[in-house]
Image (cartoon, rainbow, N blue to C red; front, side, top):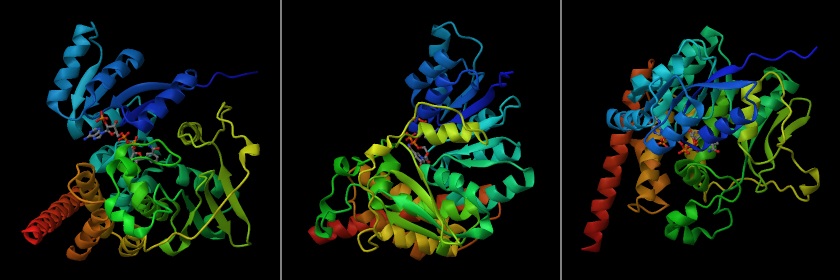
Length: 401
Ligand SMILES: NC(=O)c1ccc[n+]([C@@H]2O[C@H](COP(=O)([O-])OP(=O)(O)OC[C@H]3O[C@@H](n4cnc5c(N)ncnc54)[C@H](OP(=O)(O)O)[C@@H]3O)[C@@H](O)[C@H]2O)c1
């Protein structure tokens, strides 16, 4: 006899982003399995309105009071009175911790989603984790809370999702190495001398994935892979020395796990984030989907060692992973500030790793023991990064004079 599953009730943090849209597309495809209870958006009022009209969540959050007000007015104009509109970090926490939510998709970019993700873990929700910055900045705290509350943290980031799948083939003690694959980004083969002139448009053109702006630039500097190294250490409880990176331009193998007997398990699939979202939402089941991979397309699989001179962000990430605590917080925060400056045309591409290194050098390593302490260290690292950028700018002006 076929049993109809009770739909999992989902909160999406970052519903208006790339992962948010992938998640809603999965919910759309499997209405008998998943339902939307609450949504947290940032500044995109039009998209939040469209999502409210389509999904009728119980609660929706916007980044601030003004945006919440704008959404509320639009909902009123559409005659919708039964959606509670909230805002800010308290609003995101409310979205993530509603009693009737079973599963929280954490997909707000940056540390803005940290408090809500931690609150969701504390509230015992199963987490589908796309937001890597949460684990980088506060991994020790989140993992400890998840263990205490017996909460599953299911990775949506495609590499960790692949590792999670491969880990089903052995125990943690049987793992020799985790191999994260990297596409190498758009500048894998560009001569190093041309890096200084990389434009925003070039950096935003990822060869295989369509993603948000920050993660796309992070892929171009390979800092994204660096964050993933730290994320893997936290999720799978391994030291950084056991997390390796291999450049695999086809992005067909999403990652691999090498076991002590020499066996290597790999996960292959289409480059479509809906698949890791579906895996996380349906775990431990596997749900039939049309996200099929054509094996005949596997004409070539290349692997090479990443070039640490071309991509200094990788070295910085390994160093931060070894140091732990505030070094990881500073790595992420400094990068976010530097990437924003690059996207605004203020600094060249090559200043992104230079800024991160300067911030890491200036900040002593500490081990924050609470989420507010993590956020404080994050704010400090951002302010140091801004100082580094403004002193570099004034030096450039002086040199020009
Ligand atoms: N995209 C991918 O394929 C992919 C793959 C692996 C991991 N990830 C990770 O998943 C996370 C999301 O990535 P993405 O590509 O989906 O990013 P994105 O497209 O830039 O979307 C970011 C989301 O966060 C929301 N947001 C930003 N600031 C906020 C704030 N202060 N309060 C509430 N919401 C806020 C945005 O809202 P508005 O748009 O309304 O402002 C948007 O919904 C990142 O951590 C990324 O590293 C992404």
